[in-house]
Image: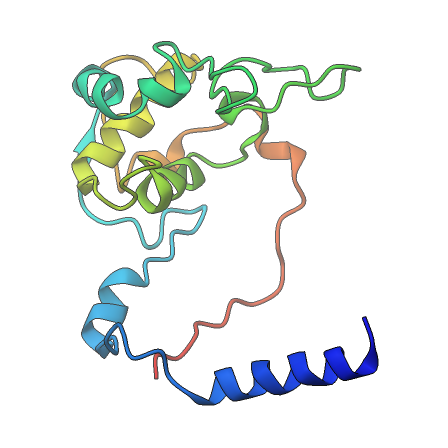
Length: 178
């Protein structure tokens, strides 16, 4: 690219940054506070709610199985498997799944809450997220089908790879909402 093209591109980008697009709306401090949910490994930040794998099975079937299959095995080269691979990380062919790799059950809850279902993220209630989390953990043999998960019991679930990570020791600083 010549220097003239580079300069022109730079000028256009600079001008574009100075004009607002004219769509969207500012987020209120209250709305930002409701969405700013930080869930820690020890359970701080988890909202009230509850669910077990038995209650979560129909939710999983309706909202998760299309991508992750009925038993959490995933879809080849499309969507990741959620189960399997426990004990395989130190082998020549490790399988990273929720059961084999993730260190904290609270992280599973947080990911489901924020990002699932893929086509409608943040559409599940807290109870539905606890129930779907229970299904994923049940499929991995980590909890029983009727073991209730809630803001108190979920942090107590011991994931198979919990000791496979080095804990973060830096202090956490919460962002200020403008």
